[in-house]
Image (cartoon, rainbow, N blue to C red; front, side, top):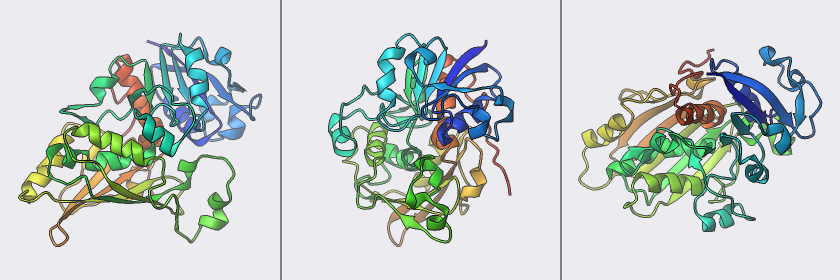
Length: 349
């Protein structure tokens, strides 16, 4: 099988990472790469690390250019993907790496995004617990997939087992994330300049304003539809690492639940998963451990003094957080082995 692929937004970070992973996918032929202001320029000028794709030239991002492929990846800023989706009706599989098709609730969309409410698509986090099953069941055979927000999927994977098993109270979740600035994209912004980030840690979207909050609520509610309302205090902090997320999430322990029941909830949820792994008791991941890998590593602690479960999760925001999740979901949708073209191994040092 040879799958013809087009990648829009190919000069950006997410588009570049999708291309890097697809270049090693044995079933894929990357035929078309597109951009907006960089159209007409060689891809290699903007992605100099992608040497095997040096023959490609960035084309205009138009429905006509994107049509005629088996799979189209939309790695575009918020609000741009939805412009193309109706005009790509004949493309067998479209995967949006932006936010346009993630949310199912119009009220949440209006509160955090605003504007026209795009159609929700299948959510691209295969390992996520969904009312007794896994999200990969929804992805099998899907024609439209919304890749996750990197922060959202990290927190959701961290806490979904506890919510689904009823061992934590989802009404008082606190998550603080150390985040690399590549998650904000390649556009020039003062707060993302090296002189602003190096030697510092900078909180942003503080006080319940981050757009990934409704995505987390949606994912955790799907894990246990009968659970209490999901309430989360979510604070991301920019730190001086190019890529990566280290998320520390805590939630109260439900009265009467034992330590063994807590650990069992997480270990049983991910026992058969390749890309989501629970570390042995007393071990916790570092952001560096997942650099370049499609892996989410989780460390679990039980803080009886505070009566809270603590989950520390490490994810590469550009791989498992975005591009890797998109390609993993593509594999499932097309009936390919789920791990094709993806690795659990990171890069060190």
